[in-house]
Length: 389
Image (cartoon, rainbow, N blue to C red; front, side, top):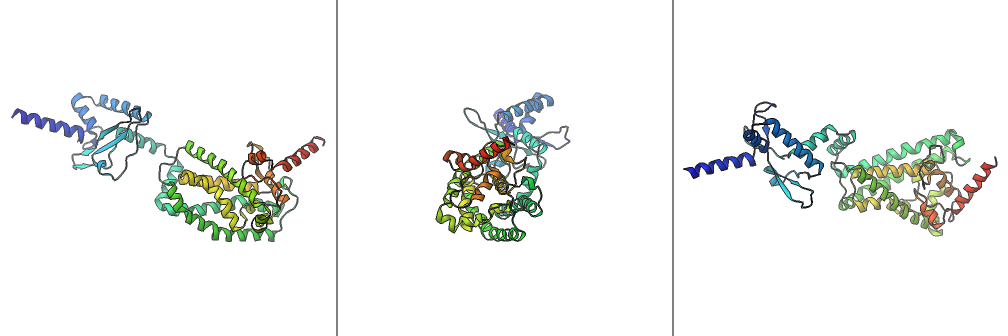
């Protein structure tokens, strides 16, 4: 009889510790708590002490980065939550599941104190970007986001940033900041816009759709959480460096005699560029130089948020470089080694095969290989003339 009583006592203790129980607390009758806290309240008789110890331990675990997100849908998620301890021994530690005895249901997925605190912090500190992103992924599939929505975003940024320089040129605005005195006629501008729409719909959109399986294979994701800003910045910097290197050699190859005559000359039809001419090119060139833009993301398998940010920055950069205007607030006045409109406008003025200034964003490749000597010589002469005025 004694052994049976002991066995029942052991079973009851195990049930209380391992599964959970219901305690009346300040949140009202029938509210559930973890079995760990219930055991403390029952045996230590101190609600405040149990809560204080839980909070202290939870904060220490979260500070040490001890939580790995729980995967929804796994069988073991019904009873036990596993938290990966990022310490030297890297052991797995089980957390008691939460069980409501009133309804006799196990809450799924369960949550450890650390995860509850993290969710509270995430809810309290949710940024507008997080909320907007949650709405996006809730209303569109990943394929739609990576193809159609990406195309819409690209077109919006491109035309909104490129149209102002077209209007400045057409109506003679900010004339003192215009790099070349010549201007394109309205008909010539309209011709560029119509062809751009055709190229984008017939070339860019299909490429974005067909590229999705490759990016997915490389690790593209769109789910929450969004990547940490340090990851985003490091990836974007890597993309810029890699894109500059590949673009330089591809662009330089396009200025060889045959490729220039049959492919790249389309882009140079506008010797006096304006913002929208940045993407006015032969379809073969769009694919050829577009590779330089997507190879970085394809290698890293980024979050879709990072890919979009990279695309926006790249579009803004190339539109500014082709704007035909050099303002006091132009990025080249503040960013070291940044080419910008003045640097690239020189490239369009000379045309043909020996123009130099082949760089995409930063000028170090032209400097290393001496393909900016003509530009630097002209800038030195202009500087001397200003000194004697």
